[in-house]
Amino acid sequence: SRRLPTSPLYPAYGLETYGLPIPRRMAEAWRHYDVNGLVAEDYSTRPTGIGLDMELSEDEVANISSALTAKGAWLDDDACTGRLVYINGRFCPSLSKQTEGVKNLDSKCFESCKLPEKTMEYLSRLPDGFTDQLAAEVPDEYKGPLTSLEKLSGPDHNVGKATSQFAINNQQGTAAFAALNSVKAGCVAYVEAASEEASDDDKMPLPVLIVNAQTPSGGSAVVGGEKGVSLHPRTLAVANDRSSLSLVQMCIDLDESTEEESLCPTFVNGHTQIFVGASANVTHSFLEESGGIVTPRVEMSDEELDAAKLAFQPGQGPEALDAFIHNPREAESQRPALRNTHFDSIDVHVTGDEGSYAGSIMELGGCGRARIAISASLLRPGAMASINGFALSGGAQRSDMRTNIHHIAQGTISRQEQRNMVGGRSTASFRGRIRVEQSAQQTDSEQLSRTILLSDHARIWATPSLEIIADDVKCTHGATVSDLSEEELFYLRSRGIDRTTARNLLMYAFVDEIAASVDQRIVGGYDDFCGLRSRVIRRLENLVPLGEKSLIGGEFQSV
Image (cartoon, rainbow, N blue to C red; front, side):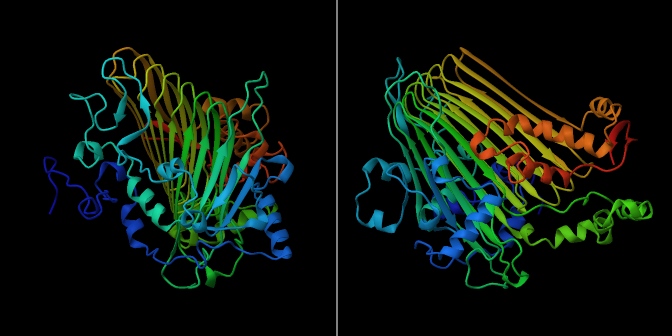
């Protein structure tokens, strides 16, 4: 039966069974997402040896470190403060550099009960308001210290209990997956930045690198079957008062050339928690590059492919011909990574006065379904959060980027810029929410979403939103969706640059403004084949439109 617009949308059954809402196709948190494709896959297999360290021989260490270097996911010991490497959810001590503040927490650490109470409290928190107690007291001259999330801006404008329908409509839908991660994670990547003495040197310390790598089998002992494997990487980063931390997280593939019989659908459910103390400075770079590279030219129709074959010139080389031998749409539908799902939730709490968090999130992978949700709560006066995001989607991907910046204390500042590039026949969505509570007077917040659509078959839902309860604020937000600029293309081509190179230049310039905020020590050299710039360019070349623009429906479109 068809649901009428006036019909109530009841919460998912998980709310009654577990107290947490699970994905539901028409729920606001999962609107425009491929929920049907998600639940159609069976990810019930667990990797072998989960919770145990992975022992590697000297040859394996050399081979894997070389592979990580080739993917730009490696920093030598003298170039980083610490390095934690996980393969299929298992910690690799021989590939890592542990210190007192950068270490792996395994089951022995929890069984011995030697972990600080504060660490256990942090790990037990759930996002989306399902842990009602705020991570820090919020000063308020009228109501005293604020400690409850559901009562903020009450009694007239509070969100209420996290299980209420009004609250669920404004959530990111990550609480159930964070709880699942807490149960299934075999270990925790723990990073703690110690307090520093005041100095005139503003130089950031060497970065801490955390690598989560996965093989095509996902570490499953059962390969070649229909059942997939689930991985649950967990990270906890704590920046104490007056400390500085540069945290780099990377999600990559290993052994992409493995035999096809060993391929296994993979579900990655990552959860990262970051707590920023007073006058602390945290720079966070998150690069998601798993799932390989999507198939190019899937947007082309059969007629366009036939015309391209007829127009093929022998001097173009075998690569150009090979691109048209097989139907790109058919090749993309059979790509193994299209069955993979990658979720990551990042939960940030600025718990000290004038604490600062700067995050750069780049979603570049080729998984069939990808979703990154980041939430930042500004709990103390003078706290600041800056979030720069980029999402690249192509082939037949379904990608989603969600952000939530919560201004709770007075005089807080936030800056957000989200850029999306969508090509092929992919579907992407972005929802950026900023909420300014009544206690957050004198808030200064800016949000901008910019999207480039590279083909007529690509789709994007971009929804920036502001919820302002306070009356003394300065807030702006906006969104733009466009094709590559025809004037800029004409300028480049009038200087002798060919059409494809001109489009590549404009596409990379669009990305580079976000990539520039990533820690430069992990970015690599300008002409480094393994550097971030080269890796991004190789992915963009898959999506660059072919042919000239034509007048369709009264507007110029790429064909």
